[in-house]
Image 1 (cartoon, rainbow, N blue to C red):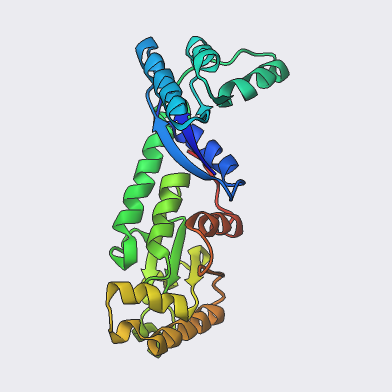
Image 2: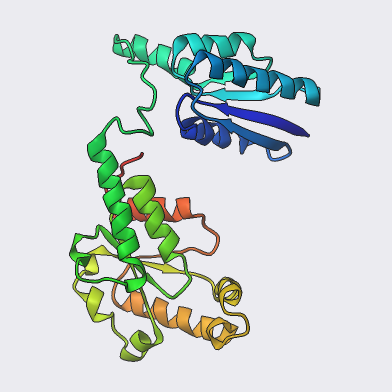
Length: 273
């Protein structure tokens, strides 16, 4: 089965996509064609969006599904009334019960979640992203004391994407530092991170998966050989265990799962943007 799904929003569409995709993931036997229509913020754009939904349904012979996060009440009502689709209005579903519980009216302001409504939080997140980029793969060590978490592990085990995700999604200042064969010979942590043990968090990975990842980067190299991957992973895990560094195996986990585990186990304050 195949269904077309529209995410309609008067801003970026991120809210509608996040909740909508979470719900759709429960239907594994259905193939969804996803269409995001952001910035539906005027009567003309509302008409265009409704026309697109209705034309798609007529062409496919099956009504589309619409996840709408349009805040404006008149626009939201127009979409619900005129779109020939199953329309799930994410704001109307939740706002009315919240208004009743809080005995307060909502602002019905667009862009509160993914905009510049709180400039302090926004720029703090941008600072975290810049920090993660500047401190990727041990590139800079002078300001490691400002890091909230420092990820360590062998090359290509997921340190960089996890650091960037922590910064982008949660505003966490994350650095990452590679464990290399030289560190295994010395049997000790690199001097650059040794003074920050309380901030260290280790990533590890199954050697077979590591070989696949490295093979894509450097085909046929010793760096990517299974024997070398096994040795590096074994030595890195031994080093982290000796030093009492908490670890997580990234082999079968998504970036979201890895980041959430780190936030929870490292007891980092969680800001969601």
